Length: 113
Image 1 (tube, rainbow, N blue to C red):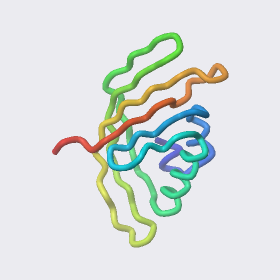
Image 2: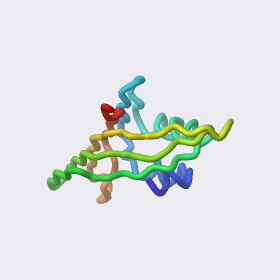
Image 3: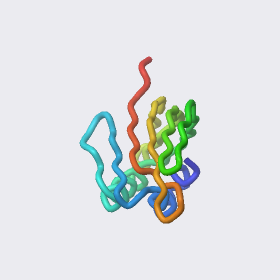
Image 4: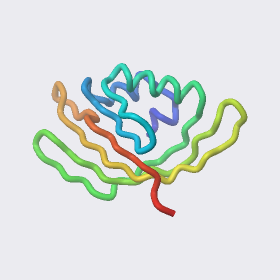
């Protein structure tokens, strides 16, 4: 979240496995590190993120970890400074790649009001 809020695309992308997939609820899957980089490039070009993540559950194993949690905060438009509140839930799977934990799958959707 710190890298997201700083619009640090290199740091954000370094957190993902080469074969990572983003699974948003409202559009097609974003498959692979190059597509993920382009997704973040578009986000950072148009918005400033002020987000906070909270883990509600962590299930660890030797090679995979699953995190279930919530993301809250705001997305601020660079075009007109309008703000959209974020209140999402997520499910993230991490795997070890070259000895480091990397995001392998990330699925999220808005929480029911």
